[in-house]
Image (tube, rainbow, N blue to C red; front, top):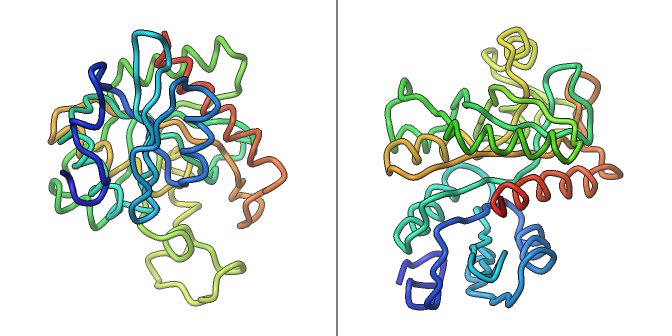
Length: 252
């Protein structure tokens, strides 16, 4: 049995899933499973990494799993999901927008990631491309368009830290950034990067090295050109839109 996720292939029944939705929050994982799946089975809560098995259709079961926060935890969960037979992973997360045209409540679908993550360097060298599966990514965009969800398709900045690495000063306990991080948000904006988040880059590198398909859709919960804080009033709606896009894409 894989040590961290707390379940093995034998726990997945006869109709074994090949697709997993991956979320950083255990609460979001449970919401996805209990809202959209039938015959839901809790597989494990070990270390807060809640995982559920359920039927999206009578013929298709899927896993909904928790990655935890950041690249190191994601590498462990993804490695073990591949061990139990998963061949396709869609990350459903949250992010902060860097481009001014992206509004809180929109979603961002990542084509690729600028991967500034130490854990990813254990998977592949820094110059190894962190790219999403093109077909799965296009399918997510087509679903968003069909549902009328405002979406943006482009490059994501995946970084290791929520505060310093995303140039947060006002909302951080540490107001003193290292020099290479001062102005990094403006720099990334000039590179036409759409958003900050913390898991997509390492997920994409693992997909390339391990040979599975990966994609990422994130709800925009902060507009970083305006302020550092997450807009909690709009978070639930934005997350629900991202989940719906992922679920509808898998169902099709």
